[in-house]
Length: 151
Image (cartoon, rainbow, N blue to C red):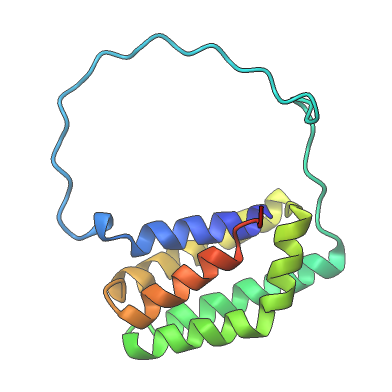
């Protein structure tokens, strides 16, 4: 589901050691290669195919999950040892929903994504404060595993 991939990507990047407080060294400017030819979409997926949207009930549950995750991060951003267990509690509470949404690969409306953008920034700031806490890292690794489609 786009929701889960968006949230997990944002938070995984925020927790990444590569995003430490020191700025990265500037790479020398390189010439741009000519644009690669666009590959045709797989035969089973037309180029203009859109993902199905979540139902109103699924959207309500997605918002509850997102609000709970936001709360777990923001409320504990000054108490890192508490953040990991709080995130795990949210994952436990919403595990079945997360699994179903990953399997369904549904998308949320753009208006909802826009509404969540500010909260994502708040969460990223909280995660950055606790990025070195082992419990927080383990919780986000668990979330990443849960939100990855099974093959």
